[in-house]
Length: 204
Image 1 (cartoon, rainbow, N blue to C red):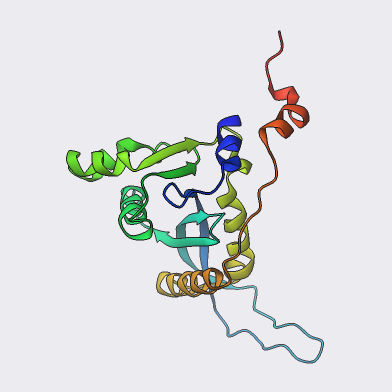
Image 2: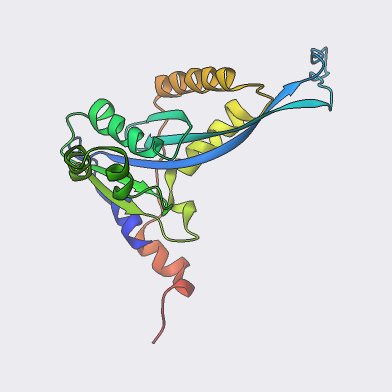
């Protein structure tokens, strides 16, 4: 926990940007009957019958000090590695090192790079990363979760029928959110944790 909090407390460095990353899933649902538009003082109404379009997962990469994020649909196990390559080569090509905060999911490790790319390429990408895993049961420490919650409320909290529509809505939300450059000002520090979460620390 303190490792993650210490990373958040470091002053911004354009050569070593802080990026947080998380995943989420949402179920695709379509309308059987067209929804009824709202009227004066009456919200739109939708039929309780719906069609199922499967489940879509998303990656959220979010740089809190910069107000930048990139959200994209996830398809395969190798996607994390390919998203990391994009993060290194396209999103932050001039960074000396990227401080990446993510949870401890088994795919969020350097090994995924070596499973996806030739060893030399995996090594190149790995050297650009400084990975900080949030502790087990400590996903609330990941600022990307906050951004995923906003995505859910602003974009995904309604019926989306299929994958093409889903990806189109993600892209539109991403553009608008980056246009406003909304940031997160993280205030919880290591010193706070030692006081407010002292029950989590070992006693002797």
